[in-house]
Image (cartoon, rainbow, N blue to C red; front, top):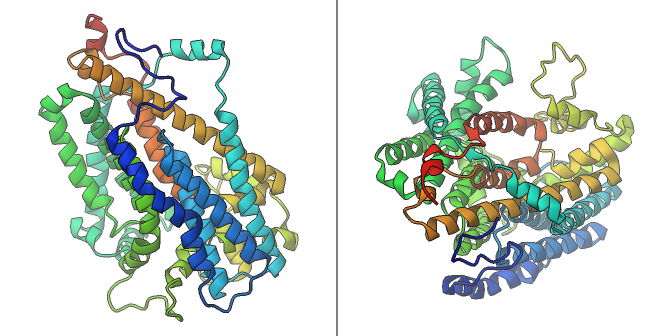
Length: 510
């Protein structure tokens, strides 16, 4: 999009002039880069432990170095690459540092039932998937032909419809109110997750189905979060919205609602990361300091806050998982970081005679809404399938994206799948940067113009931060368990989306 008259907007592939605060944050990030690439992996690798320094050890060390380098590049880049940054943050901690610590201590959160060769293959698959993701992102950096770019400029941008946003706020109040009333009031949401689960089970005892609980929980949390994000974006881009009493009042109401239904006490930690990251990136869409701080703080959250938050899973006096070591690496051996072990178990599961699904598992995930009464042999959750095959008493295990793509398509399909994910992530990040830059430039050039009086703004400016936050859940898996909230969010986004320009903006002079 061409810049307004009198302004010179830099091309979207060139960094904008660096502000002093950005330079300062980049200088302070240099020690972080050294810590990510060398200091932290070396500190973990050299800890005393009974684990052997075999091929798994060296492959995981290489994964730490590679993912740490790419995460450092995300921190230091002049552009804000939200989805790519979330991918490398997850890859560095969950697929790099944590499995390396488990190898050093010779202790895994979930038993690995296959031979050591399967763990070697799983570690190699993790590294190969990261490289394929990078290849896809590199391909996406090439601009489309000029004719394609001109066609995209003529195409109307998806924006938020103001009245439909008000309706979404009303829907969020109704659905969250139903969830709060069903569970017995707001106090339940500040107790623990076990009590929430028991209350949901009692509320859906007649249905005898987890689908009812997931449906109630999804509609009670997702519309409230999306309404808060859209209102936050509106207040950021529109001075008129900040002067209109209704919008700040609605924002405060949605904030209070999210404090109840989306707080970190009663929700899974990965869902709270979704709430936190999406809200930060929506409220500060063009702040390099906030972007770098979010990625840097994410490492500390994964290493320190996640283990502490484990206490909110259980009631006081109930038995918690036992700890058999006093090592500083102990928090990295908890169940939240069983991803590489589950990739190895999936490799063993496929090799035991089950074979690759050849897309059947992914089809079942995409058609998750089809009831089993209609589709008799509908695939079950892959983590549950592998856990049941392993003989686990609680087979509800994670199934990272690496395992799901391997289960369906084998090594070449997994590589192509990660290349496609990297390509889509890079294109979405570019579009997010372009849309937020356009809105910011228009508001700065014409503070009293039509942009400042228009509606909540671009859909992309809210959807991309939400996808970046939710990618932690999708990468950890399983995809089937995450599809419920994805579908609810997609319905809410489609409901508020419009391709028409705001009427007041159309009537205003140039």
